[in-house]
Amino acid sequence: MKRAKSQNKQARPKVDRKRGIRRLRKKTFVAPRTLEQYSAMAEHNQDLWDDIGQIVTEVKNGRSLRQASRKFDRDPRIVQRLARPALRKLRNGRWAAKNRDKLLRVLPVPISQGLREVGISDSRQATLLGKYWSAVEVYLRTGHASALEKFVGAHIVDASGKRHPLLTNLQELDRLGSAGAFSFETLYGKAS
Image 1 (cartoon, rainbow, N blue to C red):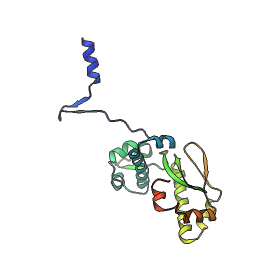
Image 2 (cartoon, helix red, strand yellow):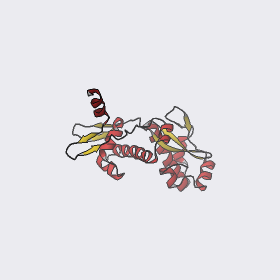
Image 3 (cartoon, helix red, strand yellow):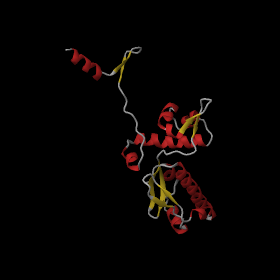
Image 4 (cartoon, rainbow, N blue to C red):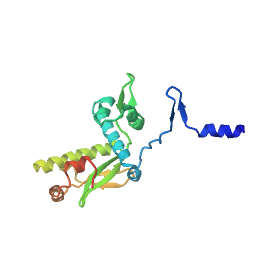
């Protein structure tokens, strides 16, 4: 008889004595490490993870964690928990971003057929891709290809170690730009 009671105690959810409400354990969020794990996540979790990467970037650029979290309508405590490998706590109690991190970022990379989503797990590779996109934007807006010259022969390495060359062929970029592949929504939202 005693054994059955102890088994029932373990199976019951915890009770918050102050409120008298039973709390159920929430499923824990597991940070994705590959593009496949990211793709298997629910859409709201993908949005959360995309925001986590952007918040860490904002903190690197000088914003406080609270300001950056509020910009994306996220709770700073959740960001602290999920982005902990990319953050460090300073002596004054503030949070700062590390120089490098291994958080997965899913970013679009142009190929001759359009855009491809690539999972990048190195912040330095994500920075390189961001500079490349800025150079592409300058070229498409002004026609000056000088900023693209430093990316000739360059590539990025995804989370699985595969190399993806950066497209610098001006005719291909013109064709993709006129086809609408480089619109604001595709670059900063999901790639089609």
